[in-house]
Length: 270
Length: 270
Image (cartoon, rainbow over all chains, first blue to last red; front, side):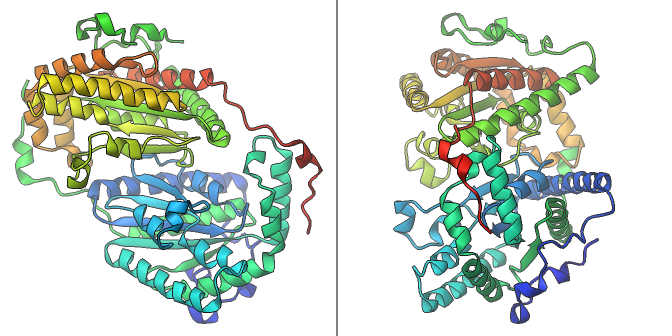
């Protein structure tokens, strides 16, 4: 079992310097063993998600952030491969619509937050509103600091009303992004994911890393911690996020609702 | 390959009398063969759903209706077991909220209709508004007829704006429902799905069948046909719905978006 402390962000002393994107320490010695392990983890996650759904009270929110091609889609595909859409929901945040922009930036996020019994995955999130907008200087430092506090308040509300929150930054190296982008361009079944604008954002890599470092430092809380996931290795990433999620689900001590005593006498009539 | 005509409702002469809930003709001779087939179908559905998502234009809507314990959840679980939440979305319709009731009955449905690239499953649907309300006489025949026409118009809108619609009635026998309800009561991991009110609805079985027969007859159209799925056998049900859906996806002739010519010269810089 992983020691999650090494990935969990302790606000005060966080720096990307202490996190190696190419760390593979979650992996075992063989691909076969990793593959078996991933299937087992996915099966256990599915079993517990079914109880979460049956319980219908508490909520789980997994937030995935990362640079382009850092593996957000792939994480969803692999970690939840044994789950069905009955208890799992994905919310993807793209460029906001004019309707969404007319509201505050947390409005669209709040609308798709998990309800009782749901496990919701955010593919990108309200963190874009302290990242892309910061990197492009669409907001200044004062506004950015105000947003960190607003985000912490918002997440505290979710946590205090029954939501377990896990935030994962998929940490890839700039070299790995290059390889994955080039791979997308070479594979016609993946090229649709490529956007020429992504190359412009790639040029802003150091600015993004700085914005991420600041945001993560400011918003890793007890009730909504950030984990920096070494993600150059897809297997390492999938194993770690699966383990993190499974650990969180196990800690919830989920149980099927008790069967009312009088149910045992019910006979369904013809 | 199934001949879907025998399940497809031809409005004028439709009667449940010609549909046997215990028909197992989709099944092969062995469980093993059926299991392999189901996995193959699920894998193919997943592959085409990925292209639908990549294309991002057309939409697919699968509507599941049926009596309590007819297997709506089980269908979702099995037919989509190889799919991940990236391209699939489930919308479940429960008792309407006061907000929903303050709008017309199609309002909440329209909000969760599929967008470009999505495959959406409706677990129950706007058909509840010509079923439960009809059986309990909350609407009269005139209003019910008006709703059939409104539903046909609404579905035509969806179809004409790029949605492939498949409507499945999961046809179980009253005996099979009894067995499944009793099973739910006996299994603590399933009892949460049981609601004592379901027994009351069960007593109205003939009224429900009549309401279904009328509704299906009135709303099976070229652009949004109804299929009556023999569903006493779960395997038969899963095989048939998988085949129907796969056939519809194949008929869409889905293709990954063409790669822009200038992409081949792009080199991602360090």
